[in-house]
Amino acid sequence: MSHQQTATETAEETEQDFRAACIADDFERAARHKPDAAYYLSTGLYSLQLHAMRDAPAISIASAVRLLRTCAAIPDILAEWAADEDRERAVRRGIFGAETLIRFWAEAPTVRIHRPSGQIHEANLSVRWLRNECHNMSIELELAERRSKRGAA
Image (tube, one colour):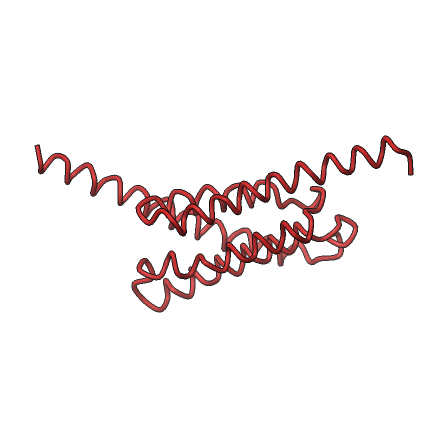
């Protein structure tokens, strides 16, 4: 392996780890900023789906651990949204899908090709559902805020 190849791979890894850190930051912001939790979760989940692709360079183990740790806080953030058992199960499926994508992204591309594509497709669908829930919650909160401001005027 040439020095140039090693430098290129290191740069790709650094770029992937930077992207993973941004996603973890979004998840951490969601945990800290209750009113904006839905926005930050939706943004982080979108970025996760955008970057955890079959042909993407792998993230480091440290990045994967941080992402999984921050992802583990999502159920606490969403606890009040899960009004019934069916919705709670769907939220948990979305979180499991996000965890699956994180583990997938941490695998070397040569390992990823052996994963069943249906498994990753299902993970993406579950994450997409959760993103949509977060987006809808964000819109509902904005509408409530606007109504409140109109009422105060």
